[in-house]
Image 1 (tube, rainbow, N blue to C red):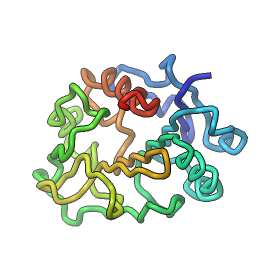
Image 2: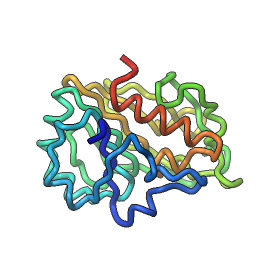
Image 3: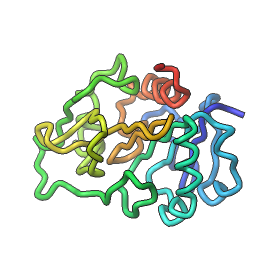
Length: 201
């Protein structure tokens, strides 16, 4: 058993990535289909990655267990758009209206383990196309630490919040490992796993 659990929503191969670096081949992650999550003892892990597209009605049913996991010191990375408040600190996703190319440019507001030794500018485009990273926000709670933002740093994309002894990190876009450039993906995944293990403390 690994320290970090990756929860995928449909076909695991679709969670692999688009960079020639397949996260599903990682030896540092356990993988589970979303509808098998109810049978998992969360406390056997230090961190959980929720891939974009995971059933949020299901996550709502597991809300109490996820909160307990966080309160006991676990860490959760949520990728995607909040469509249902499955955790108390989450708010429904808000897209940027009438978004234009300059709005996609990403600002690093606060340094973070996840982006250590990475250039945030490399996330601005993917295969020459902007907007993969984020197009809106999961509105952060008052005490959240804003990590990245778009639209001239006015719209938070990534934020982190202490919850009990643990932390939740949300990214309002496609899975972070998919948003990364080909050259940056291995380092990003290394950073994600280290963060979810608590190696930044």
